[in-house]
Image 1 (cartoon, one colour):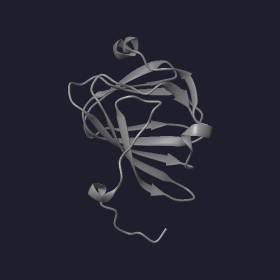
Image 2: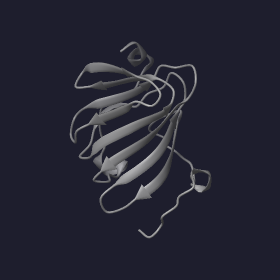
Image 3: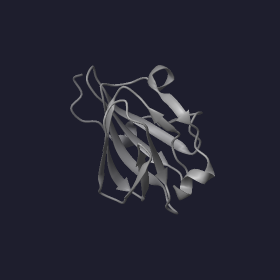
Image 4: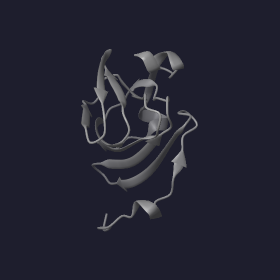
Length: 128
């Protein structure tokens, strides 16, 4: 990859059919790392899932919780989150505004083949 400056405003947005209320922008996709800028609508969340990539998040805006191996951890703006590869987890926006974060995955993964959904998101997940 020979790109040294990537402008978020010039990066296409993509919605995922599998996660309603969620958009992502692929910032970097290389042999070793995938970096996304993600936005989640209020009171939404990811399914409980796992994948073969370790994942790090930097919370830009909003608040919520991450559930890792069944344990809930509250987060807010400017927190970092980490989940090792292969560990079940879920990210939930409990705020009234959007949740915006940078997600870093290594190695890169393809959700359609690498994401293993354990349980779909439901409003019951909002209470943890």
